[in-house]
Image 1: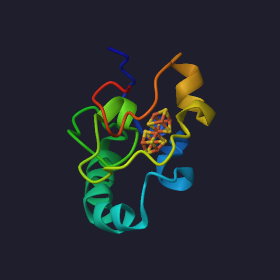
Image 2 (image 1 turned 60 degrees about the vertical axis):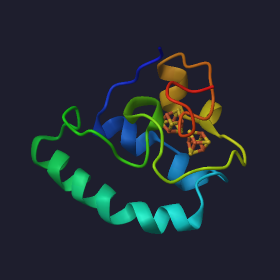
Image 3 (image 1 turned 120 degrees about the vertical axis):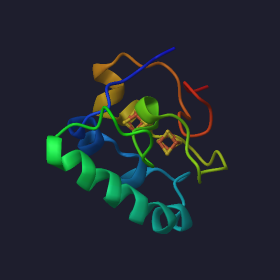
Image 4 (image 1 turned 45 degrees about the vertical axis):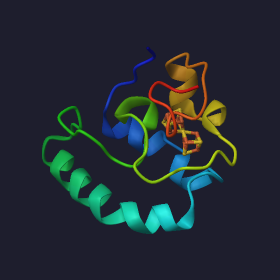
Length: 98
Ligand code: SF4
Ligand code: SF4
């Protein structure tokens, strides 16, 4: 399965929350408190490798707890996608993408 490193660089590059039509406004609102908490935890060490899940970088952290509909996937436009030679889409809906 395609696996991407869990780190802050990849999180900054991830365009799921910024550009994706499948990442609904409701999911953004819902995921913000937990994302912020996880990020603060990670920020202490600058490393997210111990973080189980955040609502972003789904190619590294696994599928979303909130996104449910495939309304388009912008992964192929993402730097992380290119750097890791990813080939699939919808990492938020299917573990390892589809
Ligand atoms: S490839 Fe997709 S899921 Fe992975 S970091 Fe980029 S936009 Fe996010
Ligand atoms: S994995 Fe693809 S479909 Fe899911 S939020 Fe990211 S860009 Fe959108």
